Image (cartoon, rainbow, N blue to C red; front, side):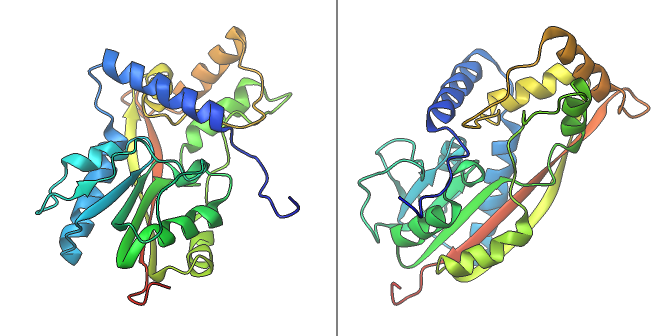
Length: 255
């Protein structure tokens, strides 16, 4: 198809990444802090607008945390399993009062198409809300990965979305009353390896369709040393995650 979007991300690698994260989560007592932070933020937004949906579709690994937030009136959640807008589904148009997406839209190959799908799945007047890691995230990790192999830089971290591009995308997708905002979450790390583990446990690893070869042992050690060289006086590195949140509705007329 001439107009098909380029394949940047691998659906197979996304599935493997999610499965690995599930296994790591069962083995570890670590808190998936990013999902917890995003879920709490979405909970606050829903409370602020006093939105109490009866039917909800959860999209993306991490969105299951939304089952535990205070909905005031517990909605019915879609029971077909983890949804992914890169994979065809049998979901019917105008089926949900709310579509909530966490950690998903940043790795879809057709972002405009995913946004259109979100709108189409909403009942008239329904609410779509999506949060994901944005383009200003992990600056120190990116620098460390470059310094690991400066003579042959490779795409070891996938591209991230710039929030400035989102308003136009939401308008093109037909979202009513679209809002785009972002904020920074700072996390402090004592070791490089802890950051890598956090990313893996939350399914935030590289899922490029054409990934670079993995770092060798020597290069990985250089990345570790470069990252820790950016530590604050207390020996911890302050790394940042940009959280982009998109909200909007399907029009009351259902268009």
